[in-house]
Each structure stands twice: as C-alpha cells, then as structure tokens.
Image (cartoon, rainbow, N blue to C red; front, side, top):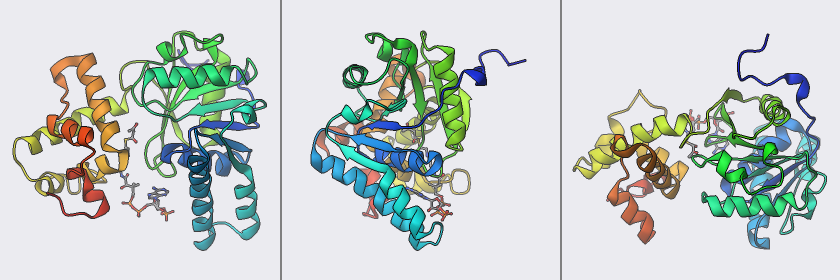
Amino acid sequence: KRPAGAPDKALARKVTKVGIIGAGLMASQLAMLFARSLGVPVVMTDLDEDRVAKGVGYVHGEVDGLLAKGRIGQDKANFLKGLVTGSTSKDGFADADFVIEAVFEEMAVKQQVFAEVEAVVSSECVLATNTSSLSITQMASELEHPERVVGFHFFNPVAVMPLLEIIPGEKTDDATLATAFATGKGLKKTTILVKDSPSFITNRLLGRFMGEFSRIVDEGTPVQVADRAVAGLAPMPPFVLMGLVGPAIALHNSQTLVRAFGDRFYASPSLEAMVAARKPGYYTVVDGVQVP
Ligand code: CAA
C-alpha cells in the first residue's frame, strides 16, 4: 500500500522532451542535468540571443569538462551537445511534456512565463517551477490547467547536490505528482514530498542558519571568523555558500521567511544595502576577493 501522500507510480507519464524557461546559471545547470540523466532533447529559452547563447555555451563547457576528465567519450559528448538547444521563442516547447522554469524569483514574472508557455504546450505537459520560496498554489492560480503545476526545487550546484524538493500545490493532480517523482528518480535525485509553505523545508532551515550568521557579522564579528567557526561542521563556509547561491536570492529567502514567520528569522540590513547598491560585499569571498 502507498503511504499517505505518495503518488501512484502507474500514473507517471513518460518525459520525451524537456523545456527550460530561462538560460541563466540555474537554468543551464538544469539543462545539463536533464540532458545527461534523461538523454532527451532539452530546449532552453530566454529573452535575448546573448543569454540563450551563454546558456547553451555553459552546457557545452560542462560537456567538454566531462570529456577532458575522461568521464564520457567523444560520441557521448557530441550526443549531449546535440540534445541541448536554445531559442528566444517558446515555440520549441510545443511537443515538450515537461517544462521547468528557472527565471527571476518573483511571483508575477513566474506567473507570466507560465501563462505564455500554457499557450504553446499540450494540456498534459507538466509545468514545474524551481522556485525556492514562492507559493505553488498561487503560481498556478491564473492558469487554465493549474493541476499540472508542481514545485521541483533543486540545490546549487545542481550536478552534485542530491536533494530535490517536490511540492504539490492545492490543485496539483496525481498524474503530475507521479510524473514529477518519476522524473526526479530519472535524474538520480533524492526526492522528498514537501508541503507548499514559505521556503519549503530546506531553505527554511538554511534561512535560520544563514540568518544567524548574518546577525553575528552585523554585530561586529569579522566574516572570516564567522566562516571559520563552522569548519568541519558544514561542507562550505556560510558566506562562501551565500556567494554560490547569490546574495540577492539569499536576501529574498530571508525576507520571505521574515514575512511568513516574523522575528524567528532575520533579513540582514547590511546584506540588503549591498544587494540594493549591487556592491561587492562580504560574499565576494567566493571570487577570492579580500573581504572588507
Ligand atoms: N558544477 C558541477 N560540478 C561541481 C560543481 C559545479 N558548480 N561544484 C563542484 N562540482 C563537483 C566537482 O566537479 C566534483 O566532482 P567529481 O568528484 O566528480 O570530480 C565534486 O563536485 C566535488 O567537488 P570538490 O571536490 O571540488 O569540492 P567539495 O568536496 O568541497 O564539494 C560541494 C563541493 C559539493 C559544492 C560542497 O562544498 C557542498 O556541499 N557545499 C554546500 C552546497 C549547498 O549547501 N548548497 C545548497 C545551497 S541552497 C540552494 O541552492 C537552494 C536555493 O534555492 C537557493
């Protein structure tokens, strides 16, 4: 018997083509993962040719890296490069059965790209979102087929982080959920069924951890000292992690959590100021820059 909430595997639909909305770093990492693990065509779209070319270029670079390390042969490298294409038009999604968005973390933007995609894809195509904090139910609310929307949340770096949070919204149907779990398994990720609540599970836990670090630094402890305090406890110093995730995303996560849960969480004013001014801040440690 299936445990409560677990989808019936028999309902899962086969994924034969994947669409990715966005061609930024997260989207490009997803393109690489889907192509390599599922071996199906992947189309990436973004607003302009430059971004699309950059996204496809990232995938080619990763494939070349695997080739150089001897992990794959030349034939496989050519095959993988051939699977991933990019376009500024979403027409290439017409025959996709699984489309995932990885665009700017803002509800209105995500709702808009989903509405655009819905006009192109079949009514059964899954619309997955890699949002790290926003409501799946709300994101699906304006669509004609909200039952095919599901949260599909990866972690950075996508190629190596094992976890995938799968989040059904209020209207997500069983076939969509089953397809999401089967796809996650195909991607060789550890899948967990997560409730649709602000920042889900992992980022809520991480938000507490990162918030406390920001507070310690805001109270005057040098970044290097705070980072060193977790040596051996965490795989990466917290502020290096913030650089990897992106300070704007880290700030957005903390703001979402403060809005939802109040002062159990902390949105650092100094991080906010740095993001607003686009100034390099303590997070520049990730580029090897001397911390101020
Ligand atoms: N892309 C692809 N592969 C990568 C990579 C990247 N960006 N970074 C590292 N790797 C690979 C390396 O190639 C290496 O692979 P092989 O063993 O096959 O050669 C492997 O990962 C290990 O790399 P390293 O030995 O160089 O480094 P490491 O042992 O220190 O591990 C790490 C690197 C896995 C990133 C580790 O530091 C780690 O786990 N850091 C924490 C990351 C984390 O917490 N991520 C979650 C962020 S929160 C988030 O993403 C959610 C959100 O919504 C904002």
